[in-house]
Length: 247
Image (cartoon, rainbow, N blue to C red):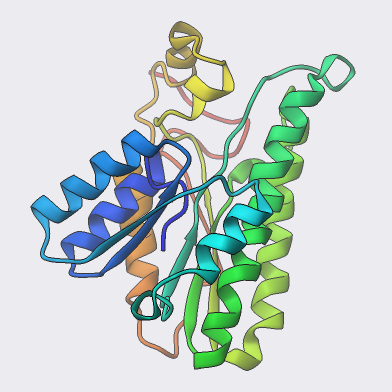
């Protein structure tokens, strides 16, 4: 099950798992994109696909979607909590409250809602693997990143807490913290300003969705007794959240 499957890391993750024969539950807010992805997956892979059109920020929608899963889809082996975003880039004293709430509701509460709905299904089978997509911004703050950094720091802490809590249920939890990655991330952050978004990656051979998807797939296919708990990856030209070298 991949949340936020209609773009970026989520879409790339769905494609690589489909390529390797996994049946998929894909979720997203944008129905048309979700339908397009389902068609592509079915056309290029011999798998089953279930599309769930809901917003992870809406607890009732999340609970309804998982509660009403057909019996054959309830045995979720892998959950990729990918749905997330950054919106706005202002100093804290000038921050847009709506932007803050959108990030907190998606990056933290949405992840919690989906995990709360799916993890009992895994616990009942004493098996499963949860991936939480964070960011290196959750490990170190930067100017104008305030609430986004805080939300991703929460993802890192929640991942540790989940790992501990679900240990008795034989459930793996992996926190993935990417650095600069060229997806729709900056377009969303700058609210459609493509010029400003493109400038973020200028001179940097940034990570791509496929890079993150390959790492998730690698972690998911390790032997049963091996769990990668926390993994940080950046472009070669980026050493930390604020240190990069542009060519």
